[in-house]
Amino acid sequence: MKLTRALIASMVFTVVLLGIYYFHVNFFKVNVVFYAAIGDGVVAAFMTGVILQFLPYFRVFGGFEKLQLVVIWLLFGYSFAISVPTVIDRSLSFYILEKLQQRGGGIKQDSFEQVFTQEYVKEHHLVDVRLTEQLQSGTIAINDGCVTLTEKGQMIASFGRFFRTHWLPKQRLLMGKYSDTLTDPFRNSVANVDYTCQRR
Image: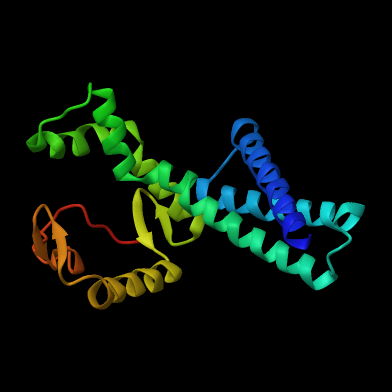
């Protein structure tokens, strides 16, 4: 009996979450898709928790059980945020599939670098989107056209570099060959460039 009602409550949460998310993205301003979707999940979890608290149908649950359900919904909301809108919004893999579909189902393999550099960056406003996300996250600052890391950004970049070097696969399949290339993507990076700047 409790399991059935917990499943029904979770279905209510799912409907509330999707409703809030749809309303949010269609009628309100959104700074960062991921953060907005997480916020929607939190609001949906607490709204459903209120429904759970006051509807007689759910009185079979004790206070701790209701709290557990809310925590489960918060985790589900986070999973939804990162696995659906965020992935579709920023996924290069989705872009490849959508681009193949747009171009009639096929693109020459040796043209994909051109597709990425000349179409993907422009069509998805990639630079603007990513810089906006980092500004909202507090990891970068932009002053007089110079983009610099904040202290928070330095810490996250150092963590990412450490994790990439020591905890990403050393034998990763890339187009039929196993390689550790992506554990150090800067390995063959151009040494001298003319686009660096310093914060004033």
